Length: 387
Image (cartoon, rainbow, N blue to C red; front, side, top):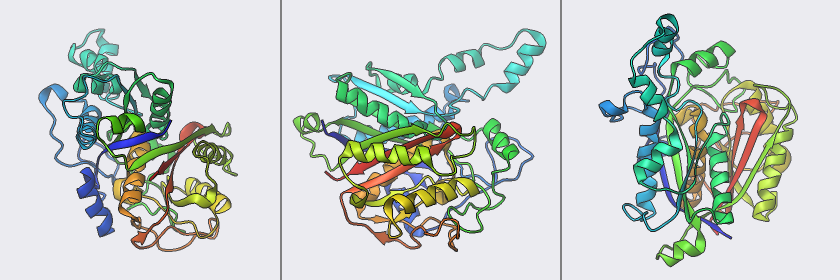
């Protein structure tokens, strides 16, 4: 069964929707800034989504609002706005935080006094990302919120494709969403992997990542079903692979063992070889270890001429949203026939030996790869195609 991608929805610091995002990519400029969404003494720059409209009822549920925005765009592009009711529609979304860490003051007060206001409890109970989007879209197919660190969004897409292939649903809304939150911001700061300046993925002088926020969501459906409702699919999800390093809680396997297995599994599912990959949207966080391991693996599997890039210099690392956003960016790259140069790269690292593209680069070919590497040693690979 071929799985068609009939809708893409994206929101990040790079823009809302495909048009704004492409304009930012063409500019080659990323614009990290200070945290404005919560108080902090830390001065690491971040990539925030500005002017996100949130109602009083959605206070403390920013991740859900981001996901609603992206899901609305994806469903509209698929021609399904207000037309989902005849179908069994599944919702599978990845996140790391959602809104579950926005009530620390409540927890503190409840622990000290044994009582507290009911609103945070209601917010917690209503904060399941997939369930909330299913309610927004009024669909009643299978629902799952995937929490697998920074590969959550990519894994959610793989799970949704499996639902379609097994007949659990007719259409799947899949991807990831995450907001900037004080807890991971401080946690990543404590780990010493946040950069004090704009991140520089794969650069010799890279010194850490910038956190970001956003949502990237795809509409997936069997090719035959899309054609039956008059849609001519242009893009497909052709391969998914997932593998663990079983090595370290926060560091990737030094030989990239899990990443290699995940990529091979995705290639096998797509029935293609590494030579068929026209470009790679790399995870590319800007940390020393991630980029060294990922870059070396890309060289090993695809050779020195492989075209690859990281979009973290435009969006920051959006954690549970990253896999969904970057799957959408990969699909857009194939469709548009070009990929951007990520901001920040200047010099080749001798430990990596290859460099990402340094200017807007035309791409030809049918298949492209998006990679995700996560804490806990989770690795995910998605292959997007034009056929």
